[in-house]
Amino acid sequence: MPGNKQQKNDQYFMRQAIKEAMKAELLDEVPIGAVIVHDDKIIARGHNLREKKQSSLAHAEILAIEKACKKIGSWRLEDCVLYVTLEPCPMCAGAILQSRIAKVVYGAPDPKGGSVGTCFNLYEIPGFNHYPEVIGGVLHEDCAALLKTFFKRKREQKNKIKELKTDDSSHLEHEKENGKK
Ligand SMILES: [Zn+2]
Image (tube, rainbow, N blue to C red):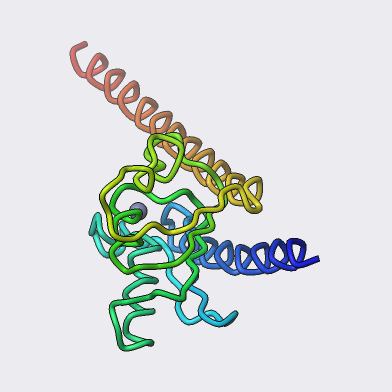
């Protein structure tokens, strides 16, 4: 069945995007990854590098789009499919539209900014000259689990630091009091 084959393909490429997300996590970046596929081949990969580059533009999709354009030698990515582990934000949804990408496949929906269906759908606003096809929810549990684990670890680290700081300050208070005597 062609539908099944497409699903298998989508899952295969989403797994590749998940691999990219894991690269981000190793750098202590929020684990989001993307790949761009042309003629069933990956032509570009990208993972979130916002912290490393200290740039709000360094999202996985933007970095992958830049690489794909270089590879193809054109800003038009008309026959390409972009796979990304998290639903694109407004900036990336815009860049996808601008680069004429034919289809976007995302993993987990993003309640905090997803712009192709969750918070709003950029591609339902009339007047643009290009509308990519969108498929959401491919391997969404795996994609979401990556983020969940990352943020849980971050929260635990934060609490640990807080705890250590409180220990420090109570120690200082204690010293102060002792000094007064
Ligand atoms: Zn983005």
